[in-house]
Length: 266
Image (tube, rainbow, N blue to C red; front, side, top):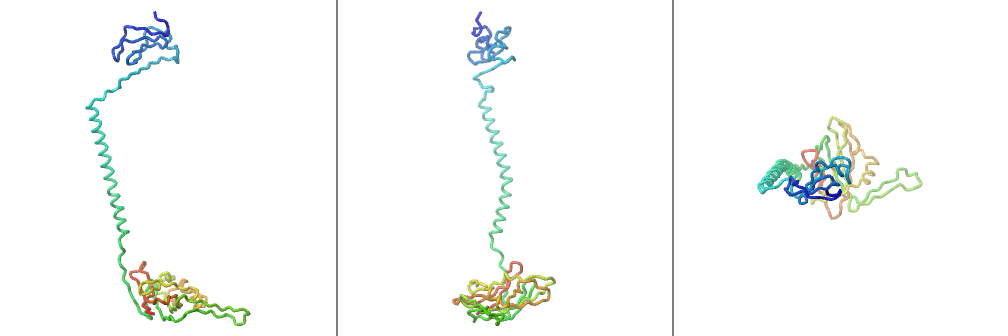
């Protein structure tokens, strides 16, 4: 009889590979020396289930170098076909979903990048009335002879000089400007549309300080205007000496159907 802890050959054969199995009394199992298959040792409790390394419960460990499932060439081809079919289906689904989305984005980008439709340009002469949104606007007069604006003292009795002089970088062009609210509600004239330019569309700066002097420290043009009310004001632009005052834009056409310009030609 083999002592505990030793192994001995027995007539039992391995159910996996058919080789003769060895007995491990300490572990209480029979083990195949080739494929390492283990089975419980029948009829013996030596070292099992309470032997070395045991936890008090039966334990069977099966080890083998053989794969659990043998993959044949036909199975490999079938798996490859399934993978190709599934991958193709996923790709087709992604294309079916993404192509319309890309088409929408491309169409939107094309719309934004395309040139806006050209607006009609309406030219009027000095003294003529032009309709600008809910107002009638008129350039009454044009004077481009001034080089400076002088503010005289409000009270000659004061002991200090309240006069002030603003000089033009080029020349001042003073425009007498009137607007009348012809709408049915109080509104503010869009002064941000007022833009002076040369024949080559060179933009001239507006001198609001000089306007403040000429308008006697008021800015009624920027205030709400009641229906039927007329506001008379002065506009002042600094025109370079090497340029010519050609147009005063009254409307940029963004919120109206046309661009309205007054022909100055000074």
